[in-house]
Image 1 (cartoon, rainbow, N blue to C red):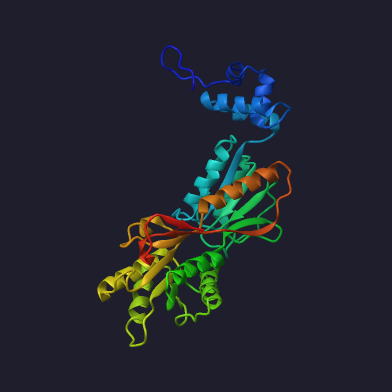
Image 2: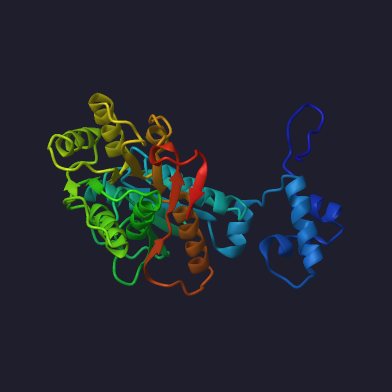
Length: 349
């Protein structure tokens, strides 16, 4: 831990403290923590353990002067509400903290004038790399990114040709959700989702259809596209159950807000979940999913994992390594709760 001299003021542990306790030279301790130099694995491990015990953190200013780096990554987002960005930043920050790298966040609507200011701020901070993220996978920046003199990675956003980006695998995430309903014995599965002009909505609709066709089942009518809201889920459900036709025995929803609206409609109609109809949502927005009665089975987009992948890709770029360009679709996870008739707490890939 950090040292506390008389008077109560804390002093940061130094590299000399680490070297002394690990019984190495200062040079060896420094190289062990930087991942450089030749030494035994046992020595490198001992230095890292001592550094953790002493809560040692490198002096970023001195380190930056030596290595010509700021040890800071920039993150630019238009998700001012934080629904998508906050989990992603959590994963990014967790991956960076043990590497002595900080994250500088700049949030604001993607308007050209504001973007220019935010990009200038990133340059003034001399960040080593930049993550650009957004609220939808088919939208990028409204301006052409000027030469930044640093690597750039895109997350949950469209990226230019030749750039590297990470997005959730929405098609297979939807397929897994519908396959779970099919495995639970559901055969008449409807789909209520968001606006058709969202690529994510179209991919989730395709996943719904693919899962049904691969199981020899027909979709229950057409997908009901509209807004990502509880009101849409409520209205669409009232419409589905107002006819005298055979009713669905499951509904796959394009997001958790829509699913909450479905549950509200069922409460009014006297329909039991999951006994009469099973429900699966999308996003694993816990403020909705866990508070739903019964708790909602839903697809988690693994946003923290997207943040970690983006950060590690940036570090590789900064180190001069070749990183695969193009969009990389990352797996989602199905979080199984009671709304589809399963025991709470089960997770499925």
